[in-house]
Image 1: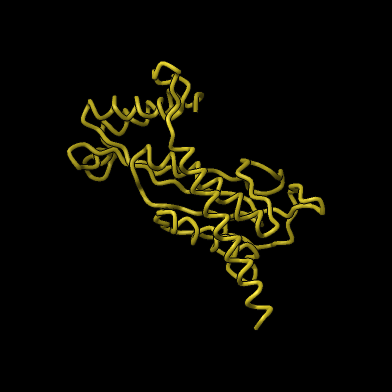
Image 2: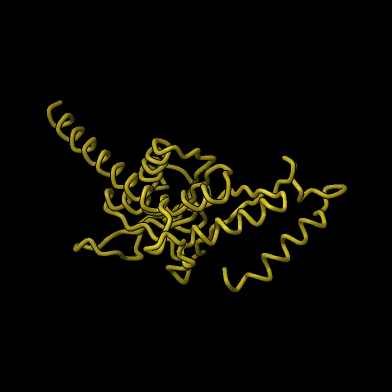
Length: 219
């Protein structure tokens, strides 16, 4: 009991430290960047997004985004440096005991929920050591902020388990890589404007898709 209590205290301390670091990162991420005279800095990603949101709002549109974030959990070496090694052999939707990262993923989710995230789902992905966590639709700015905070939280908690979390698209050549699906919903007067007749994509939806393709290189 003394041993359990001792380690329980260590875990609580680590959880508090992780939460404080994540909340500090969240606060920093949600700050805007200005010149010394108070003018918004054009290169600030939040300013770029804010302008796009306003332009859409002036046309009567609002955009909600629901991300599906994929990442790998690899071992670290004896010096604590990242590797691309894993002993895990799990695949799509596998669970414990095959999914060796399940406890880490659960801890990530619990921390995110304490920070106000609404998690839709989570599961093991196709490749060994690959995971996915999805959170619910929110407005574009809130989602963008949460994605950046999410990455910080995932890396911090993974490190606590002696693992290295990476969001690289293809850290290993011989297995499936990671992506980040963004489910988007464009609303006007509270209605989904993507929906056309008989379930087809509407003309406005086609224009929205054409805009994404036009700007794809910048993305």
